Amino acid sequence: MTATQAAAGEIRHDWTLQDARELFELPFNDLLFHAQTVHRQHFDPNEVQVSTLLSIKTGACPEDCKYCPQSGHYNTGLDKEKLLEIEKVVAEARVAREKGASRFCMGAAWRSPTKKDMPYVLDMVRQVKSLGMETCMTLGMLKEEQAQELADAGLDYYNHNLDTSEKYYSHIITTRTYQDRLDTLDNVRKAGMKVCCGGIMGMGEDEDDRVGLLVQLANLPHHPESVPVNMLVKVKGTPMENVDDLDPFEFVRIIAVARIMMPESHVRLSAGREQMNEQMQALCFMAGANSIFYGEKLLTTSNPEADADMQLFRRLGIRPEQREQCATEEQEEEAIADAVEYEATRHMFYDATRESA
Image (cartoon, rainbow, N blue to C red):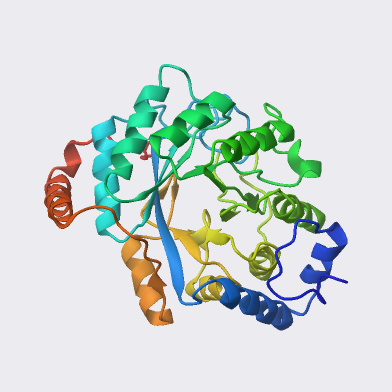
């Protein structure tokens, strides 16, 4: 049975490269119809999960990822900053919650977390979790014991992207292997956390590389609960600052194929949304995207502001996906008061997401 003949919405872990190529080769309208049919079997088609991402430690990363402004190998003008104080992380999480985010994601520019930093990271998880939000972190590679510590602290999701196909991977990164990434995903699963794993499109890869990445993700023992699909944000000073742009329709096709191959996963529009017009974003939602990062920053690159996202949601009849909140009414009132106070004194905080002028 070919991919196009397979039952819509079937959960599979035996995808072949040919199966995925057949999906990519479908006429655009047929592909979107197929993807939307699968999407409606597993999700409310008019709900989108909303997350906010904060850089808790910026710059000076020892990895040489050729797309990344945080790599210490490239001169991108980014400030090198220490681990953000716990109180400031929690304050940002409260503000994100009041603006509608249900998940708070924290990222650190590390190869892997150090022993001395782990207690602070674990406390961040506990305190953000106490606000009634889902928690997610991306800290680089994890050993089994580190993954278990994070799980014990209550971390819901761990993000560790594969970035691209195994075949193209060495063109992008040389300081860690593809297997290193797969090992971290395995450690996260063993610890009982949910996996957030996707890739970056538009890094000079060909269609076979995009096919290869989606097959790798879909053939994991469990599909990632969240699949971020990033459009490369070209940053001056990185080796990829002048790479050719990816065709917008090709990006929408990637979203649609990801939805068909991983029917129960949240497919997230991540980096690069600022370069997408409203019509392209609407096509991505039609193709099965049902998660976004919103706010002014994605780690160190810009992102459409939250108010603009909510305006687009209203025009499309989309609403943020809701989850049960564990906070009491009294905690909610306290959080609102804290958010108001934080906004009034925001200029006093050290912001680990800022870029140097």
